[in-house]
Image (tube, rainbow, N blue to C red):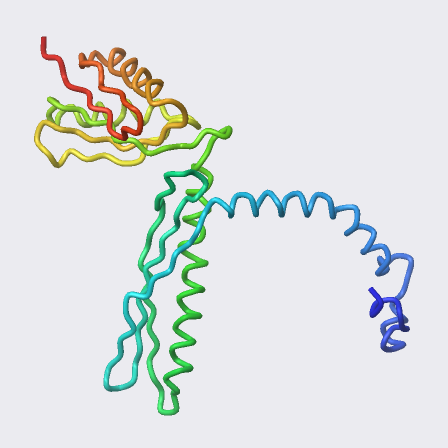
Length: 233
């Protein structure tokens, strides 16, 4: 602030632009002060969200050839530290390379590779992390990943089960993936915010609506799989 008001403008040319129609530095500063509360509040909210996540970077390899070309491979993982369980929720491998020139310096090329990897991480991985962060919690309840395992079902039932889950998606219940690679077993991965027994009841109501008869799943603390055994009787 002393630099702004402690001396006159650096040249007459700048001061000659002063007009009532053009905002002065004081006007712009006043507007910034008015918005400062909103700015700091939003900034703190972002920091609170970021405090839930740690991004871990591991170097897989730095390789090169006789021509002097270099390649860098990084493994990048985002881990949720907001809860005691934590756990990784996003992962990717970043590969970057640079071709050597006649006057290339190897140390400078390695620094350039790190910069390239950082830029690619910003463009590809960070948006993925931000998207996934929005699913970490809903109304202060953690969205936890569960596997719904349907035993005694054949592959012809897989499509019905998958659509059954997808049709009931909401902010506290989200479809993630589907697996029917094992005969007579269909696994559907979901995220659910709330108690495990509520998730079991929700799925049982879906099964009844779609005329699937299954046994009640076993529910226990810290369990992550709900197994629904088909009742052919």
